[in-house]
Length: 426
Image 1 (cartoon, rainbow, N blue to C red):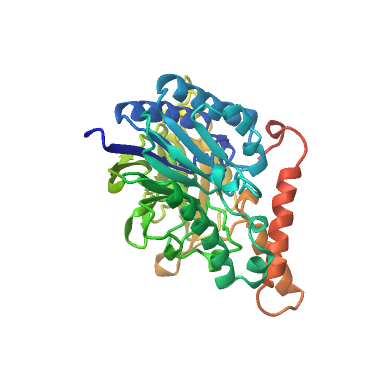
Image 2: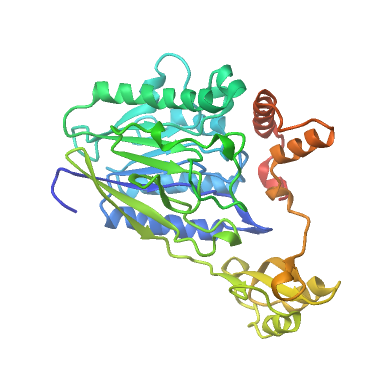
């Protein structure tokens, strides 16, 4: 791994524990990822694990998802006692739920930040030292969680634009100032962020728009050149930002929609020498359950699709959680009202899980996908409100103050939902 001056972190994000693909749970896939991750942390002799938000898929995850996270943290501390772990909340997480765990984690080498701390000592919680198993500090990390409207001055959310970006920049500037005041020669400076950055490539089927829409994407200039590495979360496709090798989204470890079937799902190994960023490289996450699209591109006629369905092996003896996910795209020259029923019947007791049937009407260049009713989970609440605003005869977009108020109310409603999460249906 190099000499003793090398400091190594593993950057990951967007685990989305508790996620379902259509109606199918992903617990076994997450279990496979976590077992693999523990082996990678050990084999790569990683000093610190950094998880940049969206630990869970919702603010009220099922008990099984919470158990998975807690079990992983316990196993990591047991197998790798010198490993330090830093986790922050993303826009899918409940900040309060995560912050409730912090008293239990004190002194454990696990640092968790759910919401932006307010008041005395806030920088002490946000900017923490990483020692990497040694007696001396090897790096300082600013653990900035997803920033909600309530974390920013009222003027930032009412005025929007430059005021909003300036308010976010101020949070990182204060964290940088604190880190610089504590840093000694040879110590790296690392920042965490969970945000949508200008130029980022998103997956529209599985990422909630944040910052009240993409019009408030954050510029890369937000991060001072003094940060040696910026570990980002939110976008599921791994990518660098603005051509900067040291400012990166690690991406999600598993595909969270069929649109992500071709993503190179990965974690990032990041090396520092004497406090300087040296290199980062991907470690591809094995896919424990295949995702299949018929056909791979374009669409097939219905009879060919039905024949493929009937030729699939039976599912008897194959656990449901191990069966591949399947998306089918069918081209119709004329209406066939019972087609979806025919496909479901052909797939009965077969060794696949059907996630989606997309129907394309017409032939040739004029063919187009059929309009279908979106699943409730894919509906963006702010978009619904925008449409209602326009239907009432108002011109232009919903004013920023109302967008901000709606975001606050929506976030509060999510935290206030009653009843155990495992009793609710997707």
